[in-house]
Structure formats: structure tokens, C-alpha cells
Length: 173
Image 1 (cartoon, rainbow, N blue to C red):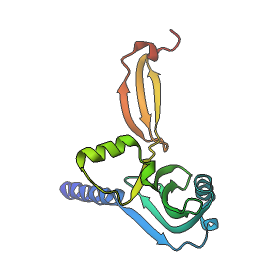
Image 2: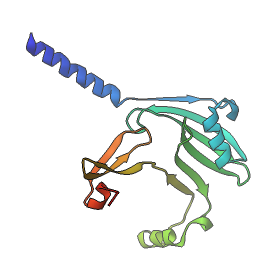
Image 3: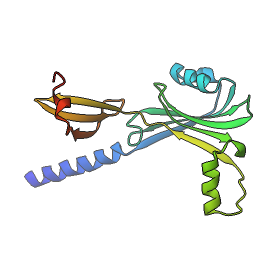
Image 4: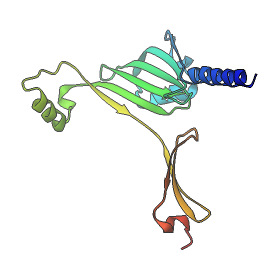
């Protein structure tokens, strides 16, 4: 009986592990930006004020996005006639921005790197990708010992480091 309980517990843990790595993705037609949650709509308007929304994908990824709902917005920046992609959480946290840019906007160092790797290459299109990863580093002391804690915006501890500087452990020194 005890063995079957252990096997059942292991099976349950395995099934829960599968669920924790699951993700859900929904694509919906774009009715208007007004149908987006307020925080998402405000970020879209702030970053791309003169834009037309072309597509909205809604994704809840329990692994990569820590269970947050992320809106993947594809739009057209009408003032520059360029396509953009904006990934933003329901709480207006920008995760990624991808924008079409022209070849003249590519930094010289990038063009130099291209020339070294592929002499005589012709650039067909250019996209500028910006990934944003927000975390908080807290320097704390507990019972006279100093630590550095790296936390996600949701409060998940990402990393713990022992502080080698004893002055951080006791700020009154």
C-alpha cells in the first residue's frame, strides 16, 4: 500500500510538472484598440501613437512569462509606414519591441560586423529587436550577514548571493 502511494505521488508530481510547463495561446481578430485592456492600450498609444493594430495574439505561458498574460501586438506605424511588434503584459510591462528599420538606421558597428562575416552581402530587410527584462536587486542583511537577492516583478527569487562586503550587512557602520 505504501509503495502504491509513493507511485501515485510521483505520478501526480509528474503530471503537475507537465501542467507547469504548459502554455496557452489565443489569436483573436482585431476589432479596435479599445477592446484591449486599459494598461495594454495605454502602452500601445504611448509607444506608437499613430498606429493601426493589425493582429493581437494573447499568450499565457506558465514557464517563460511566469504565468502572466502577454499581448503580442502587430501593428503599422502610420507616420513612418513601418510594421512593429509589441509584447506587453496585462499590467503594461513591455517585454519586447521589434521594429522594421531602414538600412541607414543600422549602426556602423553592426554593418562592420556584417562585412567581416559576409563580404558583399546585400541587406534585404532590417528589424531592430529590443528585449526588456525587469528584475530587482535587493541588498539585505539577516542576522549580521549580507545578501543580494534578485527578484522578478512578481516576487519570485531568481538568485541569492552572499555579500562579501561586511559593511552591507550592517548599514549603521
